[in-house]
Amino acid sequence: MHIEVRNLNKQFGDFKAVNDVSFDIEKGHLIGLLGPSGGGKTSILRMLAGLEHPDSGEIRFHGQLVNAIPPQERGIGFVFQNYALFKHMTVFDNIAFGLKVKKFGKAQLKDRVMELVELTGLKGFEKRYPHQLSGGQRQRVAFARALAPEPQLLLLDEPFAAIDAKIRQELRSWLRELIERVGITSIFVTHDQDEAIEVADEIMIINQGRVEQKGTPWDIYKEPKTPFVATFIGESTVIERGSQLKGFEEEAAQPGTKALIRPEYIEVGLAQEFNLLSVTEEGIVGHLHFRGSEWMVEVQVGEHKLITYRSLEKETLQPGQQVRVLVHRAYLFNEDRSWIAENRLKEDPMPVMI
Image 1 (cartoon, helix red, strand yellow):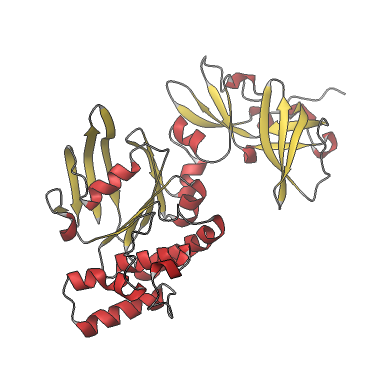
Image 2: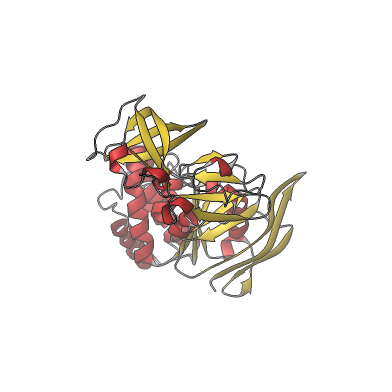
């Protein structure tokens, strides 16, 4: 195991920033720490880096306890959201800074810097200063500088937060490819779900100082382990009384059982588009939002507003139009447990009287 964290705790005054956190990270994996602001993501990152000391718990790299080892001796590369480049230094000198501290020879230093200039797509910019670069280029310099001393762990604290949306999208793909080529274990903090899902091998959902769930983006989306994860990841609608949903009356019969419905769990359309109307319920179309490849449809079913998607190839619905709605599955949860349930009527439809 490359990184082992056991029972990590950190408190600032009366605030419990990190609460009994434990996890393992395999060598070469790219892990995203995802969660709301103030959830403990950056505190965990800073303790891994040695910039904060845990109140209790253990951090091990390759089996070695590193709690008492200073940051400069942990083999860590750190990339901040604000670049933190030296304004008076060229691209070359910024990248070379850590190598000079480690007293690399001139020839070795130049070879390593030029290797990283090539790797990060900065060839031809070596003599420029930070103010002569775009935001995306400055962040590439920051990555190159962090990678220069060949760290065993790369830590990224919201690395794309200061970059505009278009460049941020490009850098996500670039970072994914860069990490795969370098093969370095990496952990990055983000509050952007799309960023975490697109870039990370695994995601850790952090909330109120605890790890709510750790797994691949697909596993977390498909099978959330807690109500918080279910409501935090993706778009969804929460129905306070799940038993009000047609087809889920028995599954959600226990008092206090709520239902979370994701857009892809819902089918909306005209009556003739369904083989069995008995499994559907009536809805009224609200707003429609064009999403490029599909329509996002808001539909009112009784007292509940649901959100789903509809293909552009199907007949376009209109606001106020009466439609049929089928909820295929729901994420149900109460104080005792949480689970995914299928619409019972789909498998056992009520007979249609003729």
